[in-house]
Length: 640
Image (cartoon, rainbow, N blue to C red; front, side, top):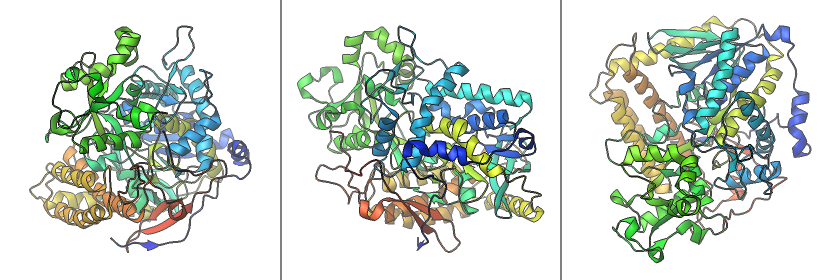
């Protein structure tokens, strides 16, 4: 796959000056829309997870006319419910040395110095407001004996800054946002469209002015217009087929925007989560995450001896290797996700893995139960333990959990500036759908933080600056018709192939290819193999996919086929981005770029930039945004 080098790109919206004053400076400099004029302005929000739900609720509360879309049957089924462990905030309730600056530093370091300073510092600042907002909504955070909110530790930090609601934090936070959203729906400021999937973006006069959606129940193609469009459609980890994401998670919305002119930034930055229930067979269609919060009290280990098939209880203490505690004594079991994942892969590659195929390590709560008592452990993690037992048939109170790394989150996404606006004027991108805050590796408990920060606090301010110049007049009918025809033509093409293979079979083959060649470890050789095979598999898809049913009805096969087609195009760009970036950083590990201890070795001289890819019919165009650090020093990461 050939690409060309384009001009450099800059974030023109980020203010200068002391970093702690930049967000206040931007808020004051942003144009305001008076209440009467807000009633004349229309905003479309696609996605109802933490980012989209909070954004639609807040924009409705402010007085804008909002249309909200999701492909689920209710907003509260968004994938944000799957985030279990907690949400970070720099409130320093424990008095253990936390601060806004420390959260900022931990996030930049955790992202392997590949995130913007201004964005990350703003995220740390806003984090303290999120907890107050959630508490006011009635989110049932865990509390200490005295009634104060409780916190726990998470990977990549040496302080306890993670607020949690047992093992269902994402679900409780989403219910808070959902309540706020439903209030605005009842008030008439938000018009909700469930079971609708966005299939294209409408561009008129160079601006994002609407979306083409398919009613997933009737099959009807609809056009919806607005003065601005917000995408909050999550990440693209399902390109690997097996991942911790809900099966419906896809890349279609942001890929359509990419084809319309929105740059795609750092697509190769994929997070592998270390705490997942191992694959159990070829029949499996998704993976189940065990929250990273378990690493607070669980100890990770494998047998010292290779191919040791003894039951865990039969392996004495002196014949166990608590390898994270041994290699990283300062952080132990709470090293960041990328480091814990590669360490697990390494011990399994040595032949010391446990369980079927040797692809697993133990997460053991024996010591925690002995120290705290079973009741205390159950209060913290009971629902997670129950879920594990239901899936595996093993009781984690009696036997150690077996875990192995799996695809989880994607740090890449559409490029946005400090205002969260993409390269298409009027198109804003929030939450996991954008690239902006996590660098090459997201710290645990920071996804919920970013989603709610973007939706509740950042976007409502910055989108006002754009909308202050609206309304933007009539939308060009030809532009709307062109987008609708493009959607209908694509559907007709998928229906007309009438081959012999299901969309799922192609998706599974693509996913295995991506895991093998662009997964936990990438090499030039593996990436070139992927870039050779993906176009072949895509060509076979368009010649041999079988889409049953009809387009004018409920048709889940058609939905899957459209999403898989987009995953092929995305996969190719991911592998190209990984091939071009010859350094290792965070979740992007190039085997050719590691130090003597096997750790990721960055190349700051050549790659201290964001890779922003422009879609072009002649092949992708790479634009680089230089990353400059004034408040942290780029150093080789060490958690030892």
